[in-house]
Image: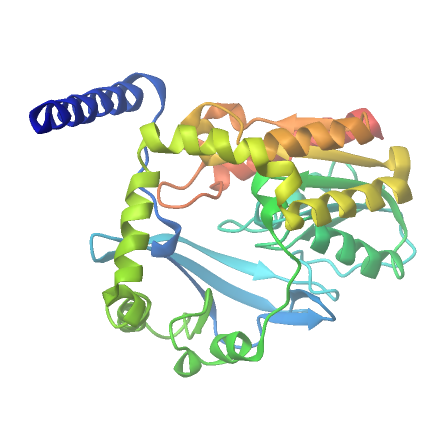
Amino acid sequence: MKKKILLLSFSLLISLAIVEIFVRSFVYKSENYNYRNTFLLFEQGNVFQNIDDFFVYHPNSNISASTYYLEKKKFIKVNNYKIKTNNYGLVQANDLIPEKESILILGDSFTQGQGYGNWTDLLNYDFAKYQIINGGILGTGPQQFLRLEEYLSKKILIKKVLLLYLGDDFRRDIYNHDKDRLNCLENYKNCNGSEIFYGFPLMTRNPQNFLNYLRDKRFENNQEYLSFKRIRRSIKRKLSNLYVVNIPISFLRATFYKSKNEKILKNFNAIEKLISKYDDNIHFVNITQKKEILFKKKSYETIYANEFIAKKTKNIHQCNLDNNLDFFFRYDQHPNEKGYKHISNCISKILKKIL
């Protein structure tokens, strides 16, 4: 009996291995990427400004930023870019003029232009009649989009709204930055390694030693790293990278997605409020994520977001990025310069249709 069980188990493992190899070779493209290995550094100082329960960048600032990825104990510099903010702490050089008719583009890091800069500047020539407002802020979702719109619309004449979204946005809660994170951004000596953003004098010093410190704090010297809990998380992460595990789990998640997640429902509610306010003057644009190109299908978050929005309005569009991985950084989930220019062209075509 034991031999039969062992033989059956061995046969099952071999079968799963064959399926995994087949899927990786012929069905889905594979990428060895782990977001926990990403380190985002800003030129230390005043980077963000909290406004009640949400945040923007510090107004009228020039902020340098760099992304590093830890690959086999070595840091790879993914990108290096500048963030120029206006009088409202938004990522664009021009200060906003209250009385000028404006097109507000809401969104997350893809709208902001993380890793590149403000790609919405490319729209100014064709739409000079309007004030194009880049309302993109990294790491945010529809709840924050709504709060930012409410904040701006009290002071700015907004004619139309474009809301650019990823499926991942609907898993995000509204938040601002606590004191510890702001202190870390102001001076790297205040960082303990647990923060998601870090300040450092990028303009005058090489961050290699600081990155090593962050790596040690985030991994080797972290008690969780040496604990059973950390080992369990590591195994769980490795298993989730297997398609034979990931695909069934994704299906089960999708089954319970809409009714069980409070964040999703709050973000859907934020979308409804924006539609109620702007009616036919708000348009939604779904942008393809890198993981969706790798898996050759929309994520379940994107599917349900598209379904929900389509039930509320006919003004829904798609920017597919041509299913081209060359539009993204190798060690990051964000578009590169080529990708952002493609997004700009896509948005330009949409604006020409609706204006």
